[in-house]
Amino acid sequence: MKDTLRFEEQDNVAIALETLEAGDSININKMQSALTVAEKIPQGHKIAIQNIAKGSAIFKYGHPIGNAAVDIVAGEYVHVHNVLDPISNWKENYLYEYCPNSLSEIDESFRLQNPPKLYGYRRQDGRVGFRNHLVVLSTAVCANKIVSDIEYKFRDVIAITNPSGCVILPNEVDRIKEILLGIARNPNVGGVIFAGLGCESVEAEWFYAQIKDEKPCAFVRSQNFGSTEAAYEELEKKVVTMKEELAKQQREEVSVADICLGVKCGASDWTTAVASNPAIGFASDIVVKNGGTTLLGETVGWYGGEGVLTKQARDKETADKIIEMLTDMYDRAKSMGRSIEESNPAPGNIAGGITTLKEKALGNVKKGGTAPVEGALNFGQYPAGKGLYVVDNPGLDPISLLGLTCSGATVLLYSTGRGTPVGNPIAPAIKLTGSPDAMKLMGANMDADLTGISLGQMTIADGGKILFDKIIAACNGEPTIAEKLGHREYAFPLLTGAL
Image 1 (cartoon, rainbow, N blue to C red):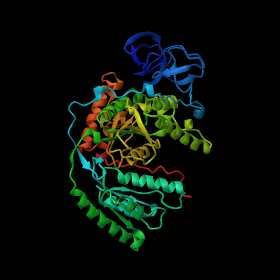
Image 2: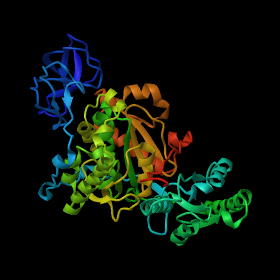
Image 3: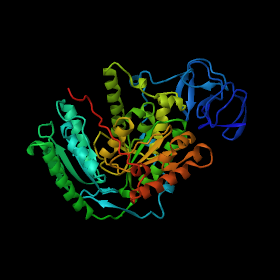
Image 4: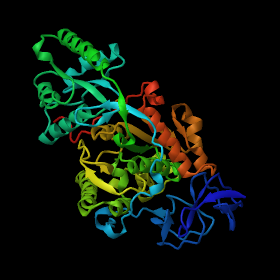
């Protein structure tokens, strides 16, 4: 007998917890079934546990994830060859389930009776950082050389180069401002130096004026110094001076309420929804229930899960903003003659057992846990209060992680099903997986092994508590594996690029 997993009673498919061969008998949730497997089904992929007529809905997680393209017989393999994605005209068929009468709060069991000791850097605006980075930000591609040279010499300095900065439309100018100010204001940044050329769309001095009263800040304008070498020398002097200033800053005792957690999944497979993302949601609920903040990004990953998010919305304004964010992204794709569903799920997702965009989305939103959604933030916007917020940012891992830090995330939980080494320059990224394959391939890059959940040896709660402990350790200064290995990947979410 081989094991399969059905999430909800109404589901008509189950997940193969091991590779199934034709003729195998199966257990469904540890209970013996009379079903015989009709064909080989890879681990993590779906098997029909009932006959499903052509055109009928396929249910997983208690939600319809697609429709049968042909008659599917119980025991058969259910995947892209016989399933139609329900998201083919999203704007006409999205789910809006805002219902204030059904909104529930996080269960009281998530409240900590003995909160852990936590130490961080209290900034002037009251926010708390758990790193004390000196960051050098390029305001234009023409200043990238001196910025890169600084990081080469000072490995403890975070250097962020800029792919643009000039000959750009006003909306791109606004995006550059959102990115650089978002990074500079992150509480993990103790001090910041802006490095520019002097004739870009938004000069280094302008950024300096926005930040100088908030934290140690300086700027360098290369055209003031006559050569690249002279500009670099000036930048190095400012780096040395600011490093000495930041070294005097000390951690103080803070609390879980000071955590701003960013949650992300990448290279998703069947274990992402089974194990990793629900465990992240559990850890997030601990943070939020105890006064902290969680940011859920990856707008492109919400299509098909918008009903869950709007149902969890604290107010109608938030529910409406979630739909507005998704509509704007959908329309941008349509304006280029393409559609969102053409890019998602990715080939790796499909190989990992994810069939439709809706199936992926329903796993994606599990990272938010059970907390009400307090607000929907634009890129670079910081939350006004505590609790769970959704953030409008792209899905590509380095951009999405950067987007979370641009809205104030100071620690990141980042799940992967297929395996990825990506980190982040601003916030410690705690890498985790529930995939036995990912642990075999890239286990050395993982901070938390949650394969026990996928294999039925560990509960979601067990995994969530492991992740919460990892959050506390990282916030108290323990480097994550990505930090130890020097993974500082990032990319700018440009709108149109240079003209």
